[in-house]
Amino acid sequence: MGIGFRELLVILVIVLLVFGAKKLKTIGTDLGAAVRGFKKSMNDGDTEESVKQLKADAEFPDPAAKTQSADKSEHKA
Image (cartoon, rainbow, N blue to C red):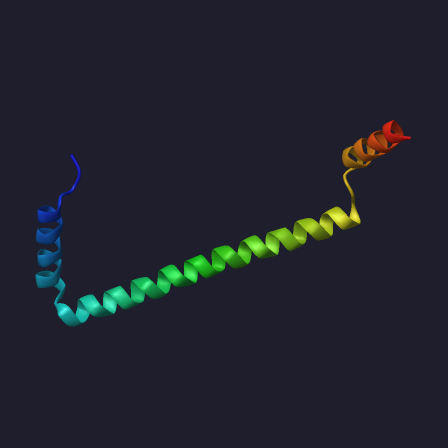
């Protein structure tokens, strides 16, 4: 039992009557700017975390990974 087209249309008309057309436009613009800012901050955060992880791996390599790569090279010889 989801929201159908008619129910959605009634909700939109009520919101339009309550807030008015000018206020609704302002709310939409502000909401869009907030969503864009949130997405941008999430993407920047992912990039920063990836860079930090790469730097940490370069400074302090994982000993288990080193052992595994050494084992593979011994088997090839």
